[in-house]
Length: 246
Image (tube, rainbow, N blue to C red; front, side, top):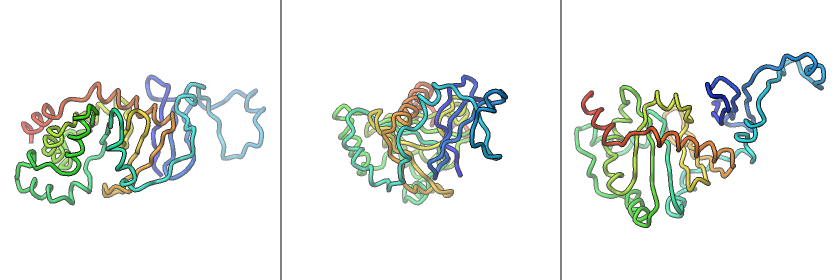
């Protein structure tokens, strides 16, 4: 099962740390093993398989989930949020490719050498234009590998259409993302209040989203957004570098 990083209070990232075990209601805690014999003798009902670790109270205060684990929902269940959000809709894209892109007719045209940057507006871009005209913000940070994957090159090629509609799309290298300890999953963050975390299968197909307003999860998403946005580069800059190397 996949571990999902929740947060850490360690500067060097070694410990202590909290992870969620996807598909379960369990949290994995990383910390220093308890070895004090005076403490160990006071523990009760200890099974041979159990161990004990020390973590600071601040780790649990900041990152321990406070609500039950959300259930997987169809992506369509959050479609209304892209119209009803009040201030910002922010996306982190971490994958090396998306099945929805590869299955689109736009992908075939791009592979054939067609310029897809100026495609006509679709439903998504029309909504972006309406919302940004009302003073709202659509923002994304996309991770880019070195060298970029085919899927990432496609997104760089098609991004100008979304940017023209009003999105602010920026890019961050995967190495930078790892240094910043950004989450290894995609999510939308609406108004710094609602998190919709994506679930994918091994073929990059979207299975649905986990939607939550849990304060710990929202805080972690806000911190990831602030770190990523500070270091990310504009799409035009990154696309120019990619064109000069591929």
